Image 1 (cartoon, rainbow, N blue to C red):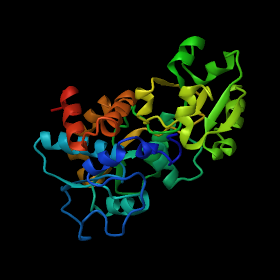
Image 2 (image 1 turned 180 degrees about the horizontal axis):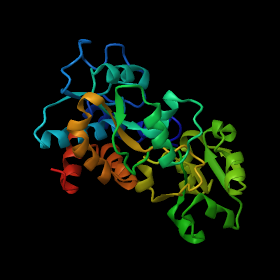
Image 3 (image 1 turned 90 degrees about the vertical axis):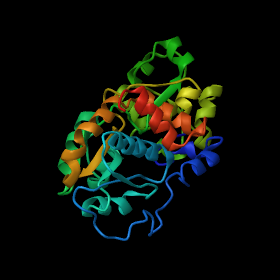
Image 4 (image 1 turned 90 degrees about the horizontal axis):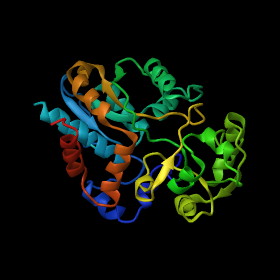
Length: 307
């Protein structure tokens, strides 16, 4: 399951080892080596565009899209990909060693405000703008998300007319929710489903085989990360969450204010085109087709009329 920071069960997808090599040694959610990023610790010129990425393929692909979009507009860009986790790269954004980074609204908000009560996309984005430290800004968020979801097979969704989590209440067969063992105690687990949407479920701790169990019918609802490439390859449907059971986590560019005005128009144009389905497709190209971030970004920008 693509779930809370097992988020990139896409690392476990077949063929990812080869894809990770193609993506310059990326691996999912690995801790940062103290010397990662390759810089000498000096702060670049105020207008220098230095794009970073976390240490997993999906984030690097988005960073590469940003880089190629800016280069297509005639700007000079330095890449410092595969940096690692927030404790490592947030200080680099603050001191200007890195000036642009693809992030995720909900997770970034929780980094600065662990007790936030914001849940919906708009509320999270607004709260994040207030929570960021001086010197950092977020540009436009995209509709693409990388977050927990409740997901069903397309056949099950078609059979019962399911588009939202609330629709599960009208299903006339017992519902079994699959996910990692800790989901049973999460506020968005079975108890949250009941209190927020009035949906009763049994729970099965499916762990790493969550999607396989969903496809096989062992469970009929699963906690799957929204960027999981198997949503496309296994014909799954992510149920909408209008009441904000899950913390929304949209892809959003974070910038050092020194370059914000220079890159905003171009990067906002990218965000406007990046959709949930599009992000899944990018990840499929990486994990299944084993294309590099450079190839994927170049094709995506061309398809979307951005180069």
